Length: 543
Image 1: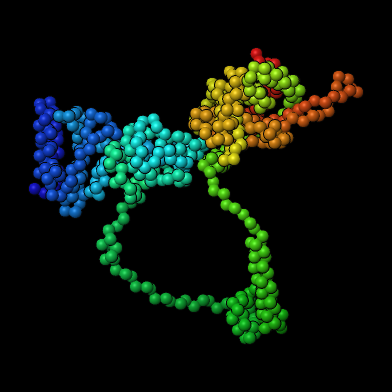
Image 2: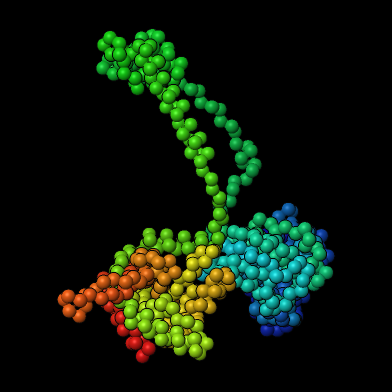
């Protein structure tokens, strides 16, 4: 019976599987086991090796049977699936690798024991690759669920990666400081038995396992035999086609000596203006052209050498946060139609209120309230009054958020972070001040977690207080539709109570960057009016 007829024979058997299960499930076990042994796929087969391994990665009540054999040089894999447990065992047709950061592998002909491949996890929605900051476990260490395995530097922060199940760390594939690791790429190997760890000392993942498989499979390459048997084509003989003789009007007149000199130095006669009789090109014309070209060529290397010698630089590798910041801001400027609205707000009353509140905070041992904390509160209240600015654009609709979550831009040595103050419109100034200081410290220490910066609906960027910048325009943080750029406060002379009186007042310039797809000009102006009202009458923020 040929191999194809055997497959057809067994397919007819499988049609009646449900009847077998209803009568006696043990019959199915014996029937499949006999067929596997008969065709060289059982423990005693000559052409195959059967592998039995506990399926601890899946349901503990299941056991996985994987039979791999060869028949006339062709790999043969037989798998079946029956969704009802049969005599304490399950035949599995397809056990997909979980969409997580690990996959289960079983013993192979190379002698490796059952092991688990730990891949680079996706720890944020925008993460495509990550870095290994440091390993907290060493090779051979015991692993328990919940223990921190390593620290992974994502595109926004450094996150701790925890163990998911018990075992032993057999091999660290990507060590401390490894960078540019694609999501899904193997970073470590774990085993269930401690004595199996030593067998992975020289383990190297294959190229296909170390990187995620492409979404579309490549077209199969043609067989080597066909390529080898293809006859070599003989080169076609070169046939020179005589060019048409130039017309008398386009003909260039030159002396024989000038033509010979031009050919020796690869000088096109069309670039030279003749000074001989009737515009004929003579030897002096060619020599003059060569002298002028020689001066230009000799001066160019000297200038380039001088410029190269003057340059002194250091190449600084991109951090993950720098990469994602560059990508998102480039996307913002290319896809979001920005426009900008600027207004000056008087902050005299705001500064007086801040002084009184800080006196109370110092007496109670609380955090000092900064001008930026008051700006965050005012921006949140303005978003509640003008909810159109608390929205984002999609291709099908405008999403208007009911939560006012304000991101605050924080500059660190590693890059720009935007931790989030959730429900800022509902929190008091002391609570906002405490959260901003704690999040800023975590950003500088590079210990922010995804929940500390994801889910914002509006952003505030302040370069006035720390750096004294008078006014600037910020880039919108997608998918948000607005960002407020806060400048420094300065004293100005303004008219007093009477026409002949003047007084000093402190004004702060703020600029609102808007996505014109979501926020029309009048809506943006309305939001700035509400914001200015909160700043110039700060008592309303305490109500």
